[in-house]
Image (cartoon, rainbow, N blue to C red; front, side, top):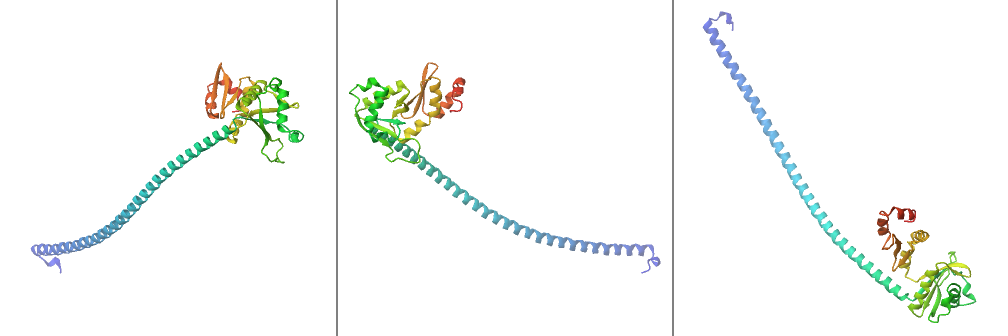
Length: 275
């Protein structure tokens, strides 16, 4: 169409028609695009919803598993607490039985003393009872004349000699009564340094292995206190007592002594390296 041949009215009418067609075409194109976008969005939204559903399902399954695991852990923890309580109760019973057994053993040894340091083999030509009488005569001549001290039996312990052990076996002396034992121990504590044929020996109460080991644990501390003339003593079953600042203090174990020492700088210095 040659628009130059058109009148102004025709030109305007033609332009209006063309604009109307163009507008219609644009509208149709936009509508198609919008519908396409809507369809795509609906598809995407459906996919997202499906994905969210899957995620939700997985999350619910995971939550259920976590809840189940927490319940099992809680049950295990409850079981552990129960078992721990049973074990602690059992250990307390065992400890109580051990203490009772130690008391019974110590009670059976109430009339005994243990002599440490008597050389092996000296009893070949004479019995250990006679050797004990010689020890009494050598160290406590006043007691040698007392008829109340009666020895019932004397023997080495353990009964079999261990050739790999350099120290002589201890000698257990059993008296006929506790009074005889107490008399000998009192005399031994008073003299402090005892001998047999000029060689140093020790006389102590005969106790169970457990009590004996607990008492031995005080060894270094006992020696340090003795050197300072603090009059240390081991009380039954294995308590340490000594004199300090004009008072006699008693300690059940090393920890209680350690706590006390922190308040006494001078005592801390005395026990340096021993505690």
